[in-house]
Picture 1: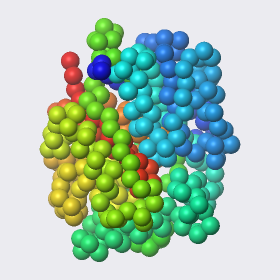
Picture 2: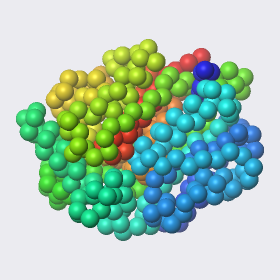
Picture 3: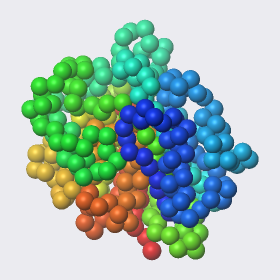
Length: 387
């Protein structure tokens, strides 16, 4: 297998882009990535499009072929990747495998989502559509209620306080203050979170992200080509995928998150690193409790120890384990299918020392964690500084 590098990135701010279409967001992010690398669209060998909800919200399927046409790539390989919140990272994984095995050389991965075109109720229905509909469609269960069951189990097992778990959202907003592409760049207090309404008890409104629109793109190629092009680049040290039962209630242990443990174990092993070697981690914290659980299952602390990391400030930009360095899902924003690509963009910015006020000093190795269905599908991508 060939070593694979990320050589360029492009992205839009996460927002409610009323004036832009799904196609417009894709084109904007893709052209920014191409222009940054000094490349033309025609130089690409393939396009990998990550999206979760366009079939539900925009009524648009066959998305990769539609969007590839918008770049003038009428005769190039294009594929759509749909795996809920894991879509973006899974698209990176598929592109990585193709480049590593010599199937393609220069490829574009773009995650794009436009959620503002649906009502809040329809967004919840769209998010819940990633679950097994034969089990969930007629019961009234939503992703919020599933999160509530996991949250209750966590609080009970580890005798944790919700005020401490909610610190995950506080940290996200603190980091988003200096992030130019964040949807919600403002401070958030624990008191405000605890005063907000319930989505499903105990999950409160301010512990979960809001619908967002956005697109993020990266260009990948073999490491040798990256060196020949003379562009700043980072190496993809590992890309691993693991699965668990899609219904969290059917798992032997609701909090074990076995797919997360397995994907991260394989990624660490392939990259020859340990959790303590990570300079930063971008977590899939679609609910504050899921971010805390991710801290633990990635091996950054013992089970039940996530809240202590938060309370001690260890996950801040200057802490020992910086996480969600641009605001995470809660504050940077969570355009669902694009999340994993935004994380990769942020890892690239960190590792090329282009993160501005959000820079983690001396960053060498970064991890991105993306999930669908409460870690029923997990993608772990590891990026590292290279020549």
